[in-house]
Image (cartoon, one colour):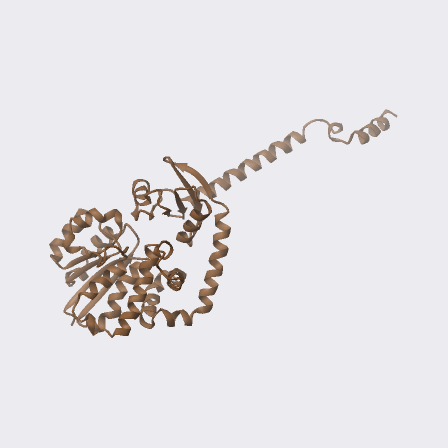
Amino acid sequence: MANQVIKIFSHNDLDGFGASLLLETVKAVMFPNCEFDLTNCGAGRIDEEFTKWLQTAEASRTTDVYIMDMTPDSDYTFKQLNINFANHWLVFDHHETEAELRKQYSANSIRPANPKINPSATSLVWDWLKKQPHFTDLSEERRQQLDYLVELIRAYDTWDWQNDPDISEEERVAADNFDQLFWFYPLQDSASFVANVFNVGWEEYAKQNQLLIKTLNERRTKYLKSHLKDTLITKIDGHQLGLVYADDYKSEIAHELLIQHPDVEAALVVSPVSVSLRSNGKLDVAKFAEKYFNGGGHADAAGGRLTINPIEIGEQAVADNLAEVIKNSQQTKAENNTGTLADNLDPEVAAKMAQLFKK
């Protein structure tokens, strides 16, 4: 029977899965007497998911709670964590929007080992693991393998793969391909995908999936080209923004939009239920997302939720336009049907008929 039962709540992107599955990967060596129970959820759902879980029988047998790649927004959640788990709960999060909140619970919030490097949830877990007993029981080769995977996830999630000039081209490509592969698989397969990469290492996994990686890169190039041609440049709240609709490759589209339109302060990618924002340093999109989209994130990369459904609005606009076309067509037809037969005949034909009926 496990000495520790650790409940993990984590985000459902690559960094969220990477953070939680990193623990599962080293479990046999570092945590042989622990049981991990993972729940991945979307941004802004941690308080709801935690409250619902706390009422289950599973919660009564849990010894520790780890929250990764997100921070609770509710005081109630923090109070329940303290009441039910005392000092046995930790938050591994890096988003700037909730930084002040985490300071209130600094003893339970994991900080990066190197404050000069932009952390991700996965890199925070890795920093924490390095301080735990039995870390050195992992072989040197295994540590190097996992360290590289952690860096790929960190670099992509913080967008350092594009912004940091010190990152090698090989690492940029690997970070990009890793994230592309993650989003290729359905959400129900995300955990098994990340676990497989952690088990075999990036070099071996990339070698086994060369054709798929090539296909995904070609598909993305076409997708970006077709969607970016419909970019709308507009001013919102005094800021010049570039808007584009896309339900895939959001980060890549936003990044390319900023390159193609250097005068805009931020790119706003609209999808059916959410928005993704990227900035080139001219606008703090984390504050913008928090103010207008009930979201947050980083100064240069953030997201939020929509209160409207752009697809329904677009469908209604098409229906309204079609109704107007039909109305105009019927009106034109009615106007053409008025008057005498002679009014609608060719003048030469009408003259000949007039001559005929005079006889």
